[in-house]
View 1 (tube, rainbow, N blue to C red):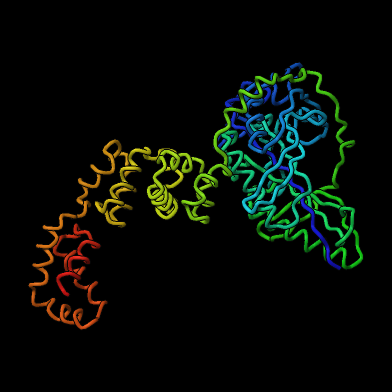
View 2 (cartoon, rainbow, N blue to C red):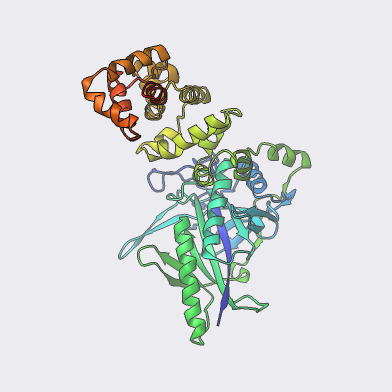
Length: 472
């Protein structure tokens, strides 16, 4: 029997506010000691009351707009009760009944649209680190502001699940609401997968794979669940609704616990936080701060930058912003885009370089020198990398090229003299005769001799043209 898979995805996005959602504690605990970024509010000291971080509201609005979502003027917090070592309060403060972000959609590069049901604000839980015989609790992550984005069941393949998560990651980073550090859990994906017989009007029983933090893991987990559930259904067995863990090492899911439903959490309105009322003017003002999104850049650069190159660059908001500084010079944009992908991103220090990119003016000057024949392709790459050298900062592409002796000789008179000198050498006589007899490939040898004579500074294209004219 053929089955149609249906996938829904819940994505937890940590917002990069300076402080936590309900306390004035440092919100960025990356690389810091466990339990060093906590307050009495975080570890639920009796009598400690939460105080809402207004910046989280502003970031939620930007995140919603990035997903083409409605922003609800009225929202409210609720308590989600559960008992687990990483949650000292015994409940999570979230938005169950009245979320701040309403319906919208995310459009994938393929054109497929995945509808967003809603997204809500909540405080994150802590983190458990498991060892052989014990586990340790780190509360640094408690009440880190999150938005949980809930998709509609519009995804029907592992590849689309991968593309949706990647595009969502891009949207959140371009909107500037998260660091987007997947390794440190800034975005985590819960994948709900179910199978139904082809033609059925009902969805099958779903399983949920929790806390995936890479696009490849999302794709592999969905592929595995589709195969596993297919085997069960073909054997006449039933799929059990449960929460699963994923192992990258084995490439398999494993049961963690039965899947809870809303009633299990005993949701109730949060008594310590008032409802949120946003004016239309406030929503409009914050929405206007949304920068260009990936779809905007696809429209802007789609006919200039090759598709594969553009999709690589769209993983780096910093690079797309820098390309926008190159005005409307299509050749410059194409050249710098190629340097970003083939040179910069291949460097070991590329992550470090992204934090301190050359100015748009320096990049434009470099592109102009290349287009004007002042720099060869190899020299262009060398000057490009030197633009990232702290010792070269402020000198500009032209000055760097001069200091490195990389500017090509384009003076036709000077080049012709060098060519004449090379052609006068006895060791080039045979190559000249061969070229006149129709052997085109020897022209490369002669060009190489001129380059050697000029110490690499001659413009190869101009040299080739002069040689052809003289060897007629």
